[in-house]
Image (cartoon, rainbow, N blue to C red):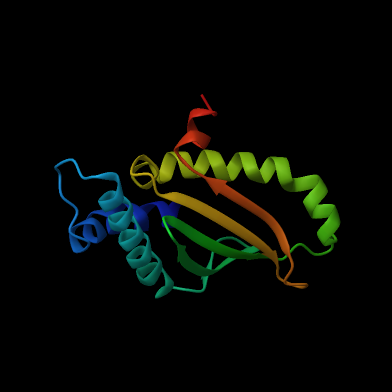
Length: 143
């Protein structure tokens, strides 16, 4: 998560510049179009560094854009637990950790109305274990 934060902090100004971000007020439609381009460029740049091992059980395997949402796709080695056990036992803990980490590390994206989605899949079954959508409002709920 720390490496990802550093990468996002470094890449955001470059992407904003490449997308023609201006300091003046933009109409909402222009801002959305600009944000789509920033998300697309960020996904393309981060994807060049994949796959990345996050820790001994987690690997970042994909990053894509979905409108104004940056989507990170992870695989988790959950052995010896089953998919169902992980979903039941770890959802709340994971959601809190991911939300807190994202709100601290990706504030510039969130403040620009860019959302971040995290998909966690089982390394073994390839099924979805968790999906967390984080936006500016998610962070205000942490206070």
